[in-house]
Amino acid sequence: MLAKSRSQMSTLGWAVLTAFLLPCAAGAQTVGEPLPPWSPGVLDIHQISTGAGDAALLVFPDGTSLLVDAGDGNPEPPAGANRVPDRSRSPGEWIARYARRMLSHQADPTIDYGLVTHFHGDHMGRVRPATPAEPGGEYQLSGFTDVAYHMPIRTMLDRGWPDYEYPRPLDNLMMDNYRAFLDVEGERRGMTVERFEPGRVDQIVLRHDPDRYPNFTVRNIAANGEVWTGAGDGTRHHFPALADIPHEDWPTENQCSIAIRVSYGAFDFYTGGDMPGQPAPGFPTWQNVERPVAEAVGPVDVAVANHHGLGDTTTRFFVSALRPRVWIVPSRMAGHPDRWVFDRMSSTRLYDGPRDIFSVTTQEATRQVIVRLGELDSDQGHIVVRVESGGARYRVIILDDSDEKATVKAVHGPYASR
Image (cartoon, rainbow, N blue to C red; front, side, top):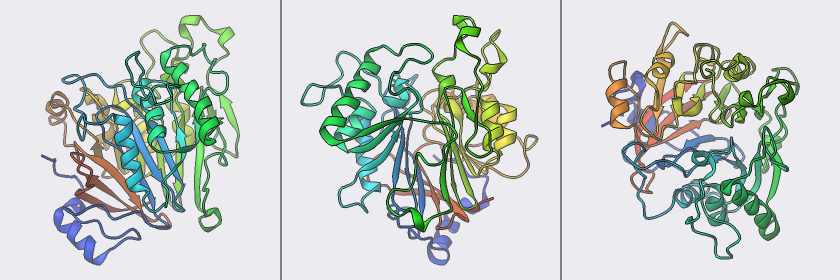
């Protein structure tokens, strides 16, 4: 059963009032009814619940789409979350079907950008020898490769293309499969691939009607320890040169994660993969990647908790720098979010004002710990942030993830963008 929201505007009564008095550009969201389709001018952010890893679909104001991660790599219950809607299809196929429904405004739905935040299976798709292959046998289907098999992706972006050598050669079955996928889909369907470049605001762009929405941008914040300075397109190298540090201190895959900030008028959204903020005991302080990222990003309206809300992330500095009104936890197993992370996200000592915390799924062990500290505003379901045309207001809509009907379970807001 859903916990009550700390926001008094999250009740069923408010949802009904919203439906009749405050319709947004994409139609009124009503509890018990399907989510109204996206419409031009609206920014949608869907944190997709599969029980298998991270996946977020963004639909920009002109209809351009961005899929941030497509994970398939969660352990089995009870450690991992239950698969949703069920196990009749793979997580990648469920993600593709979800994206196709949410992009139904296109005659032939296509994902414009696929973004791999980092090379871990719960973000891109784990591959084993028994993982099914596409009909031609050129690559195996898991995560992103599975999504793209069922629904074309025009451009892939990652932190390693074209050599995949930093900080050490990325040579394993999963990466070999991913690189084969890039080659094959480039030849078959003309899919392109680019290396994500921090600092840029012109790499992920509106592809369909850019002139109509000049107040929309996607800022590339960080990758491989290169972080935007916060001014112009400048960046700085947060990691020391590999030659200057012991091999055992070289950056980890999580530390190399990609981070972006999406801005639409007064509205700002942050997501950053598994970027950590607390180095392991005895390791150098530069392995705190959250701090320089938080300094560059600044306050936002909605933030995704790094690394599923595990204890090495979402530090006091990060929380107080971003101070979002809404937190999203892309949880997938017990300990997501960590009790101390939940405490920091909730703390009015770190920043003033109310905030709501939403999780795509919550294990019973986590629920028992969290309930001692407070309540999640949603603990199961797809999380949709729907930003009104122009970016001045937004709502958070929870969708039932037990089937494909996209039934609205709860409506939170409207919130005023900063």
